[in-house]
Length: 254
Image (spheres, helix red, strand yellow):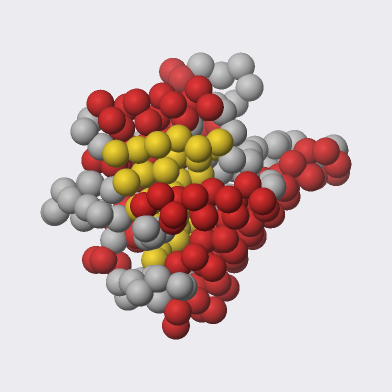
């Protein structure tokens, strides 16, 4: 496998301050991309950039709140102006709110919609508008979840609905945009080695025991495994992959 698949490509990653977003940003940087790491927390983004640079990659941090359309429009515009293009975008920013649907607060529901659904809409709209002006188009990968379109778990219904929407946005826009040279897909991770997969008060060791029982694979997915799938979908090797939703959950949704 080539280790410079993204040389001279510009990649934007939202939610790049931790977890899957950070792993994706570092993986692209390691393969030669110029990475714009976006998110709400400056210190976390700076750490992502520092890790990328220490490994010999090119990265810069930009504060942006995906719930604000103007932030995303400015982020995409600045990225394209600085580097000449926006070749790949990974829409990863997301939040989790849990609890039975009937007991869920309206604020929690709104938070899921604002970030997971409207935030992805804001990002995709700005990214597509930029990419379709470019001679070589671009590739977009949305980070959805195995919860929603592939699997349902009590207490996660609202989150699952928001993430099913993320997958639907990818599939629908893929059909609309492929003729403009913009290729759009989604990944749907299951439980992954991030803070979001820990139950309240649960230790990592306790989570590992739980996953051994719950997952056919017997363990969590790693953030690097999810990042590898994202990079494949964004790469030229996936040139005919359009509107796919790649599930990465160790068989949990089967």
